[in-house]
Image (cartoon, rainbow, N blue to C red; front, top):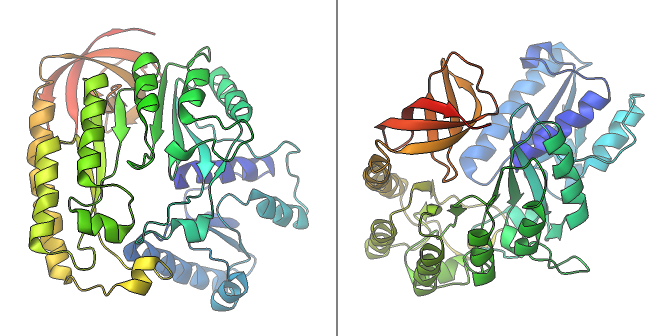
Length: 414
């Protein structure tokens, strides 16, 4: 979501005559888009603001804008604390950015701020902002507000424009995409939106994230299976393998419910790949509770696991209610244990693809090799002298690892 919003901001600034530069030192305007989901992320924001303060002391005409989840409701307090910042605006509040640009005497495009288009064949499409769930550890609802869905027709219009500019794959974004549409007059569901997008000419692939086990339903899974453009990959965080911890997290489901959901998904979409999120060291988590998380990871066999050590976030329920009583060293050990387990599991899953053909949408080039992803979201690298940017290429996999695949291109589809 932050990447999508950064692209939107860049698009707005380009319409006002700005051009991107490669370093802070060369910039007349710096926009800092922030994340504070964990303390380490907030520390990085604070460090960068300190660096920019020193830069502005040397160059007083430098403009500094700050957005993202660092920007809380106390804007005046932020202004006093960080006087080097010319403007604070909340994530997605582009009207405030436009007002600031106009006050500088800069031209601003008349059309509304639209979804970002990059040079990649893959585009990010926000479909819902905010979250209503208030998981006890999460700061998102306090910084991004309640859920607000974009209208179906606006999304369709933007995606059609993207395909005209060469986009072949979109990823629908939301803090909880499964809640999409409940706040719109027609009450469309995510399944309805997917069906409409599946009919867009020129679009080859559709992905979406992130899902919430509490809100994902059977209709969505069946719709995924029935639509040829929807990729066989799901991001489905479970966060902890113990029911008492899940209750303290206010996740709204049990591990039994999560298992049932995984069983349904794999029954309907047998070749689906699954990613998940896990938090280690939530307040009160015992070794036995942590072992239940390990057991679920082993049982399900996820393709990718995103791990985070619990970090208290001011104003959240967990911050107010629970003591951060799991020692840092214990969190690090549990983190490393999951990393080791997942490296083995992912390695075993990916090894099964050795010798198989994979269809890749080529996104670009890194270190002399073309790269792209399969429909199952597997990262694949291959070498070719031909320009493969944006093309669908069949690649025979000849090397695998837990993190990526390597192969030989056999032929280009489109």
